[in-house]
Every structure is written in C-alpha cells, then in structure tokens.
Length: 151
Image (cartoon, rainbow, N blue to C red; front, side, top):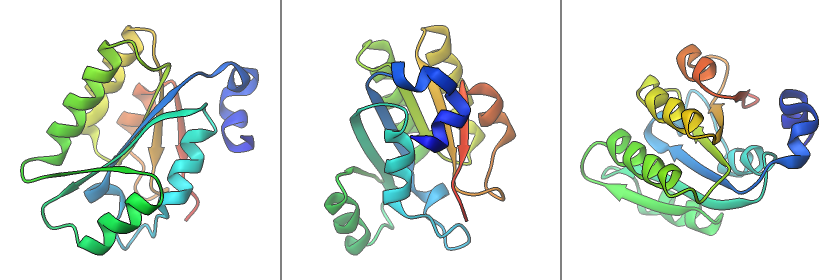
C-alpha cells in the first residue's frame, strides 16, 4: 500500500474494487523482467482486486499460461489483436459500473481512450508501467494515478 499511498495519499484508504488488465505482449518482455506477482501487488494497493486478467496472443507458451493462472490471473488468449480485446473488455466492465478503479498494465498508448472513458464515468484509473524505459507518458497523463514497476 505504501507505493500507491505516495501517489493517492489518503485516498488510498477509500479505494474500492479494482479491475486489473495486463497487456501481456507489451509488459512481459525480457527487457522489463516483470514479475506478475509485482503487477498484482501494485494493483491491489489501490483496493480489493475484483478482476485480474492477463491478455496474451496465440504465441504464449503453455508454461506462461499455467504460471499466470497459478498466480490467480484469468488468462485470455486471443488470436486477434490483444489490444483490441483488452480495450473492449475493460470498457465494457467500466460501463457496467462494476468497479471503482481500472488498472491497466501496459506501455501501449492504445489504452489512452479507455482510461479517458473510465475517468469521464467517474472510475479512478491507474496506469502501471513495466519499467521506466517502458513508461508511456500518454498513459501516465491520462490516468488518475501512475506507477512504474521497479526494474
């Protein structure tokens, strides 16, 4: 909670249910060395995790899928564009009014409209960058709060 408390201040105590959406192809890259447990912990600092999804493409190994599921992720493998599936699912969830915080772990600016839509609907947003090198200024600026995972 301390990492996010620095960003949210006292609002961290008032955070509600969190939906975490992880852009696997853009986060789980060798140059970032991201641990899925760290991503989950960072998102849980914003509140209770109601949704924890990892989106992967058809090139994902069975070992990666199994490891993610063992860490509590709902893994979604798509043969199409991961970005589109994640964006549609996240927007649908925000529109359903089911969560208070939308956390997106990515370095892809394609998710900026999703964060902006959530903000307009009163949902707090959190952009989680896989590292300083993988940080998107567009996502950081569109989100209520932003966190960079330690490299």
